[in-house]
Length: 531
Image (cartoon, rainbow, N blue to C red):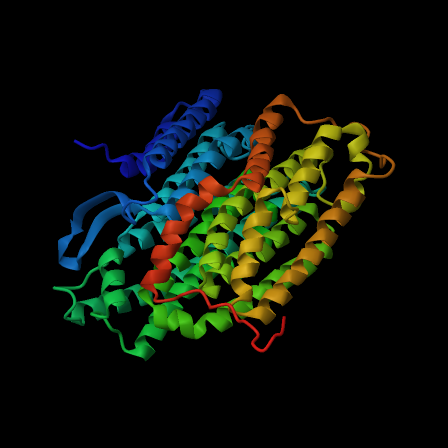
């Protein structure tokens, strides 16, 4: 009997979360170590999947297909393609590092009766498990259930454990965290509600279509029927259903102008849980665009791609400009993520092989670079007790390793050649230029703007004379180095040699391009030239 690897993958963190929360209150350290052990187990399973995945094989591999609610035509269907596998590995790699980075985040939290570490670790594992099943689900209803469910543990991570770490007024910070959590929840629940309506519409359409024996939520069957032309939805209805899915994913991603929840949530959450949200959970939104919006509604996606691409470019420039104007280091990094998500969405809706390969790789690279930059900034803020950029200065003289790693992470964020995000951003711009040259040129302006906000931030915080109050800042501790070092290594390795990742991603992108009947624009050649 074959091992159900994908079920093990997502069930392990969910079961681990239950075990951790049931441990006695006195076993605070045991709860942390148990969570770390579970996350390492998930990483081991993800590496097994990556080792056994055949890029030249079927599109979906490790498939598990079992009936769930027969009367609704829904099943427990799991499988991964190259795009999903890349995000699965990213999630599994980051989680142990985030648990180590947030080792003391839940200590001495009032109101938890000495069970703060239990709750914190359990919620982190719960988010991981729900993200993993969302990435591997091939049944749209199954995907939707966990797409919404992951909001609950994330809400408690922001509202229950966030705030107060970097404000002189702990009362203000303590009230801001629940407010940010509510804002996060309302935005995403509203997006999910719109998606639910679209999901019902899609089910009704499949039930009425002769292409199926009854209503179905199987994304494989629906996308195949759409590709071969046996399943056709009236254009107006298709546009509405497509819009419902896109809206939910755009909120989660987030895409301008649906981004307003992200800066507050990222600032108020602990650094580890903020990275979990931005680098892992939000990727489900961009993944959903690739998995559902394009293959299920290719005509609608092609019709509205200029609008979506335009919003993405606005988000790229908007996020970069607002990052330049920030006085709060954590909020600055949060706005950079809005800009980077714009690049990801731009590449997806360029509908070129380079654009979509670059977008998928960008999801991975953004997760690593954001994790490095946000966590190092969090380590610094925890030492100084303030997020205000003006309160820093001369940090590189008292903490050279911290400043050096911060610089590398910052240079990765501005896509310096030789570091991981450069390749993915370059692919996105190339892929976009062949389809939307003007939008590609406008998006390229962010390269200049990113240099401004990263280098200016580093100059103000790390260089110059040591500002009063920074004399006692210590350098990175062994636990923190254990977190930062792997991220820096990954940024360099994927920047120099991204081929292993692209070898897995490219076949899945080719499948998507074929399914939506899109080809790369042919190069234009000027005629009449003389030699």
